[in-house]
Length: 494
Image (cartoon, rainbow, N blue to C red; front, side, top):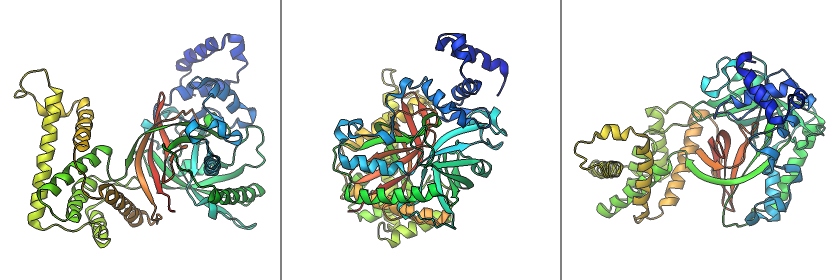
């Protein structure tokens, strides 16, 4: 693939790293080409690449797995089929957790895409693959309720799969994608159920998120898969997630296109759909000040917060930016649910005044800190200061400090959560026609420190505890840190 001159130095380097040119010559050329392509795909992508049509039966995935430079030996990756209590983090070694993880593993699928669309954005890397039928491996997650899966001898099973948009971008790529369920062995493929992509349901490039429809023809493997899922679901009902002090964060993926592996790590940050951590802290400060100064109905304060902070720049990851009528519909829905109340005109002006004063105060503190030690701030170009890379980081630090010192208004966290769920469900219903359960909402993203490998693109990264579960599809990797785009957040019911 690509320019032969540009790949030659990398191939020579591979020979040296393996010890000798003679040893390297025994490695299939597909592996060497795949390693070169993988190195050049960029931070937005962590696919396993095989720049040839279809060589899966030649054991290429296993060779690439053993030759991996990012995680030599894959000591932090455990085959899901072999997972035991001793493999779990010490604080999470509970039989029920093991049962729950193995249930979640049923939702993870291997994706084999053998076409790269000519319409893919260059930010997704590898522009030289556009229009070719070279093989790419990624991972995905079945979104359908697995406990309700059923298939008769005459019917087909249709499910929706979530993954990263850089794995499956458009209808052309979806139709060229094979979905493989229950791939838990590198040598025995007899129980694997194979499905075929049909069409894109939703895609968002900015959030690197995609949902596509997949169809499974009736087969012995599919019936076995559905039966195994139901049994695992019954086991989970009697083995609920135990109480643990810290949430458990892990990813289940198909590194280098091999069978399912699990890796454990930690969650660094999680952003709700309607507000980032910085915005939530601003909400805390603002609501506290209004509550102390005006003593207005809390629902009126929340009305202002929703309109000015939650929805002003709100974008549903499954669609384009919302229009005015959509925002008005969301506000009306929240009012009908008695979560917010329209403030009087005079109250609105007072709320705006307090908010503007807070914004100016935060900006002033940021400038003072950024230019501290440089004398007077009178001659400082504040516009240029706001454009510096350190401005947003300083803003996050300052609002966090300010929020830590305020007295929160009554039931702040609970109200924000109820509004979050209501906004999500109403917006998803209005724009996509999908009805999310009352305990589900969307996430805007999550950062984590979980080991990943080429082939982990699109894999679900979970954070679970007794009360809730969050899941995002793996999007980007920077050394030991990763981030996912759109995801799901679920509150467990008793």
